[in-house]
Image (cartoon, rainbow, N blue to C red; front, side):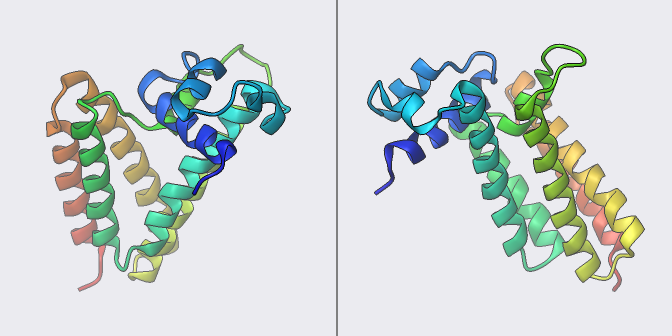
Length: 188
């Protein structure tokens, strides 16, 4: 059984992936999670910023666990693509990546934004895990780091294109292209 706090973090992540961070209010998170009204500031004394930051961390951990469990680079790519494809279809193309959603909502220029800092950390963590998997499969460190950034950027962009088109074709195309790239790079 999950606690009200855990439900609120998960609900915030789900709402951000569909609405973006700016449109995700604490009242919406409370309603979605079924948490008691007074619990928001009890569990999140840092307010909405703390809740959104923890939602980004929650998503970062979830995707990182998928990346870390992949037995090979190709299976990692295939698994991520299946996961994103399933989310897009099941939500009728409403679900994007919560980490990307907060990253594009940059806030005021020159101002500190801990939520965006968390998004940057999440992308860095994912890129590092992808690169580690590629290195373990025999790709050189420098090349693995480049391919990792390319993979993250291409998949995130494909999700945006698929949502806009209401079709998985952009994700399928990016998956094929990344798979071809990996097959050409991986030692035989």
